[in-house]
Length: 131
Image (cartoon, rainbow, N blue to C red; front, side, top):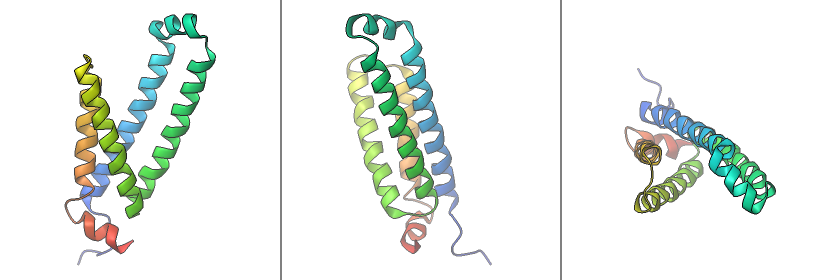
């Protein structure tokens, strides 16, 4: 007999996708910070805003990682926060597409959409209700 408190597979897969998305966002931030285009921006505004923005983005990524782990543990508030973050990221993908976005944004948008859907299917609602 299956353990009724065990985490559904859909939540586990969602957790893994969210981890990949957050780590990819961190990597994208590092790449954009060290790329040549940021050097052009640094020439015009200085390096302090770039470094400050990078630190802020890193802190947000760490907070998002904490929320992702709380979602994995069945905290419904974390699922709701991640849903809001997913909506914001999808809006960002839409805005990026309207201004000539790249494939990386689309891939991230699809991953976030899939991860969000998985948080609500396959027994996930009961899992979050029990926590």
